[in-house]
Image 1 (cartoon, helix red, strand yellow):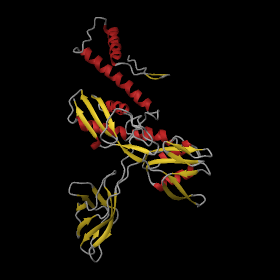
Image 2 (cartoon, one colour):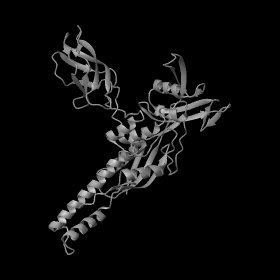
Image 3 (cartoon, one colour):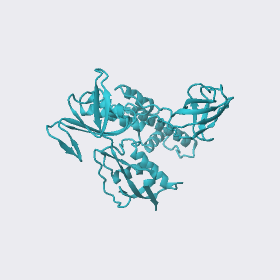
Image 4 (tube, one colour):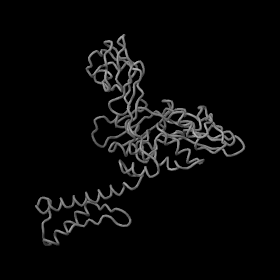
Length: 398
């Protein structure tokens, strides 16, 4: 009888496949005799291999399922369910929107809701959100949103191709660029944000401020400091007034950030920062001027030397994509480039070696001016955030 006792008090056991094979072979010899030939090419050898594969699949499936109760490893609907227990949720995908689109054609023509235009003949498609009746001059204005969810750019004038044939509709053009939507938050990004928002229900604590701001749509990262003394203090070049808070936020909308800071900070504490927004307390109706900072971007240039352990079609772009995945915080258990986070060549190389194996990074040097390169860690202050781009990364294959 098969041994499927893979779940014990300490967790899930995933035996080595060779151990599984030896166990099944032993069971067959016990049943049919010690002289049974268990070679893979024999009929019984084929059955033994199939049984071993089945047991291995059961063990690994058990382990994968057990990991879904760990919020640091869970994914998909399991992660969504765990996060809901603390009041959080994954950011859903949103469409891209183009407002004030000029429509032209025969006066009185009716362009129905859902009529589609595209960015060039082969570009992204956008659908009209509401019916438009062309006026006496054969003109009308409409709002279009992308047929698919996600970020679909459309520069001024790029929406110029009619896809849906409508009697009397002759022209379409957009005088305003598209407001790009967002893709659904990935499991890795959702796990990272969940960790950053565990104190979301707290009030007047540093953890509550960090959790609240990180939970806002569009926020990528932030740095937070507080001065509880009666005198100004300077931290990494930033001066904090007495009894005040400092937040430097990358991403998100100014008003959302201002309102969250107002809701979460200690009563009576002052503000610091170069961005000021006026927000209204939803309970008292009083207006407050809230200050915070936006980070100064520090460009990170890289010279990477790699050795490929297996043939790859495009090693340089594979390495660039892996570095960007790390920098954007899209790798599990890696924060990437965040406000106030130093940039380590060693950490980047280690992350890329995990993502792009069997491509091995032999050397990785960095620079902020694209002139002087070294392997030294680049310091990033609480008022800065590192940035990189494919064009900043030079890759040499040896």
